Image 1 (cartoon, rainbow, N blue to C red):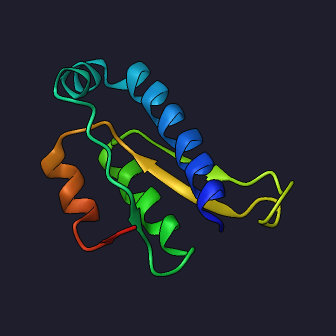
Image 2 (cartoon, rainbow, N blue to C red):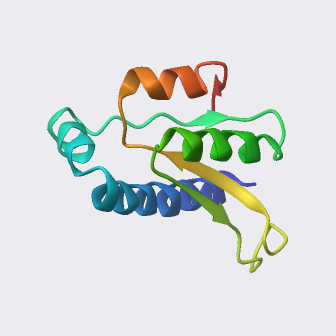
Length: 103
């Protein structure tokens, strides 16, 4: 994906994950809002890695949102492009994503 496409997909994912978290974990969202709204962009080695991360987030009860592209531009329709996880406890998120490299 091009840089602009990545930025747009990250925007979609982060907004929806925030909305999901607000509904399911309001105290986590309040803490996140009060502490600077930290966001970190990481990359997965392969697209299939989204599945295991999403499943683990779901298993742990961590809010998330997986963007599946509409297929209008660079990416085939239905392709998973970005997974936003959180807002949630930073230590728990690090356990889940600490092995990934920065984008």
